[in-house]
Length: 127
Image 1 (cartoon, rainbow, N blue to C red):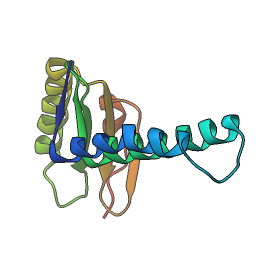
Image 2: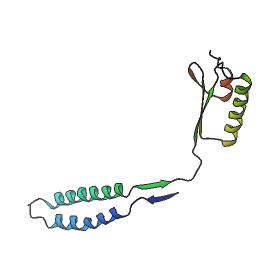
Image 3: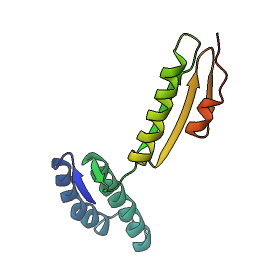
């Protein structure tokens, strides 16, 4: 796991933080110290969040998170032997790749989602 930043120049915006604090502490508007502290905290938070957004942090996670959708044409124009071979290939590829999520769609005249590879075999062939 690592974090990468697309840009570094927005970090220079953090130079404004001490100035914002100092200006708020030496304000002559007659507001209470608590009000000045809350205002300064909000302004500093906005600057920090803006800088965080502008550096575009990218979080790289290590792991195997892969989602796969298998779509198979089961219309009558496709040779049934080929459909059977394709179903076997989908089953072996899905077992070998072990994706985090897998979906199976059989289509012909219309599409139908099935819950397993073997469910594709039960889909009626459309004309």
